[in-house]
Length: 336
Image (cartoon, rainbow, N blue to C red; front, side, top):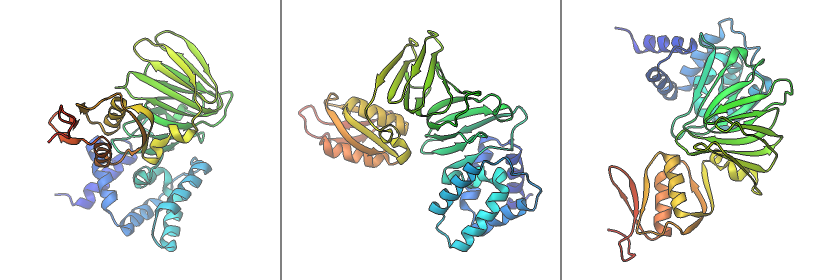
């Protein structure tokens, strides 16, 4: 019978070799979340004793992690200093585990045998990824990103599904290419927000800086996007529609603040978006779906969203096996 300590050591070794199963990764995350600061520090110290090459960790990534740690570690400065000293040494080994809860992940040295790295987020999770060229991507929940780390500096290409904010480092000789559902995005250096969930009929890109070239896989159409333009790909037809937008970046990246922002949006679209964010089927019963809603709702507290809507529209919330229903009686009174 192996002890818990031995089992967790075995799982951690598999993690470092990128051979973990999904269940083992969940177990390791839970173990790190439940461990004390002293236990984590001891584990990091053990790896620090090893001859680990961290020369490949970008200075920008280390600076970002330092800032994130200073903001989120509420321990005395002495412990934070010791933790930071160790983190600099073992970044490529333990940061993907220990800093996952802080929202920062670096995949720099440890690569699977085929060189393909895959980063994913589950419901309610957000993660920041720093690529080998210092390009950064903030991934929203239920997103998947893959790229070949060993060849990345020569061929900056990734596959992506979900939603993310990309800050791409300028390199005119090596364009940054994103392959997503029905569309290919090519940039040199720019900032944009991309939403391309596999269960959505459309994919949307909002460009804030630089320029972007879009290629429709179905129609072979190519579009050149400029700052303050938004494109929407209809996945069924492959057609790309481009429109200008006047809102600032904060409006389209509200998800980074765990917010859902609506501006004169039909109520039917509001509940559809809430359902998409939370992975729920939300329906209206005897409520006018054409009513317009303007406001900000939380993307991390479904009950609060439902309470706000029920008060605004004087209705009741009912939960069934198949859906969450915002309901009124046929006479307009709140459903019992």
